[in-house]
Length: 348
Image (cartoon, rainbow, N blue to C red; front, side):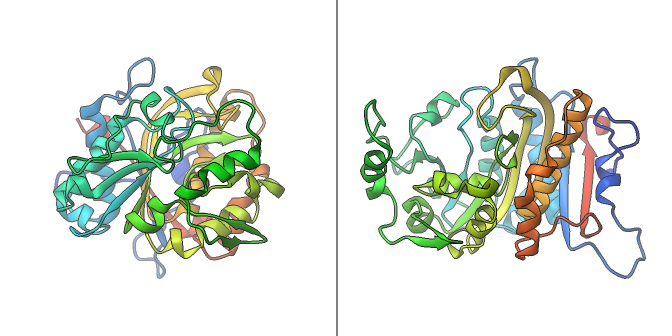
């Protein structure tokens, strides 16, 4: 097998502060194996000078990440670890950042290729997010037909917010696209998208790595705020414990199969919306099944970049990550995370 699988010490601009070192990784022969595996595939040539992904390179990165995570050598076998041929697979994107800080179509194309290799029909793949108007801006072609990969948002494009409407009026107009019965999340009630509850049977979480003015980090766990009618209601106390509680609902947890992070571009300050001065070419793809571990890694990446830029860390804001671990959603314990960093360019 011509793989070079290793834990690479990567400074990310900080002498002696590698991500692999920060997360640990037990030596072979130790009694207890790490509880969760993360894979981070890097390639310096993954993007052009604007951060737009090169499709062929990105596909290699996504394929390698899923193979390494699953432990399977073939693409079909790797994806078969997470989906079945009769699944309707929802790819929950994050396209709130417009053209330059949204999940890129080349990443989605690579995921679709993997899903179809595992026997999922194209029309049983739904690429979705909250707002219809944001998908084309991010480069997606809308499709609600019975041919090809479907792509649409919860509100199906039948509603535009418009000026002069109150928050309550907008919410009332959108309610038909969400379940009528609310679900209690901590001390709040939320309404789930019917795409999540009625259409998909398997959920692939496809977020980005961004800082967030409230929560410090937004990546895997907070991406599901785009699956509910009223995300603004869950922003109190830095979204804690709301992020964890939302991810623990059966509507999300029972369908969640995989997190695949588009780390081609990332944002280290001013998020979650685009801040052109603070986005950078991170040139990575991250794969995992533990959203807490994924967010812990995203937070380390952001703080390393911020320190390199002479900025204060944001880890103190991200109490939601520790809370999610305490509530049993996953782990943020470095001794329980096996981070595998792969430099794909070095293998060429």
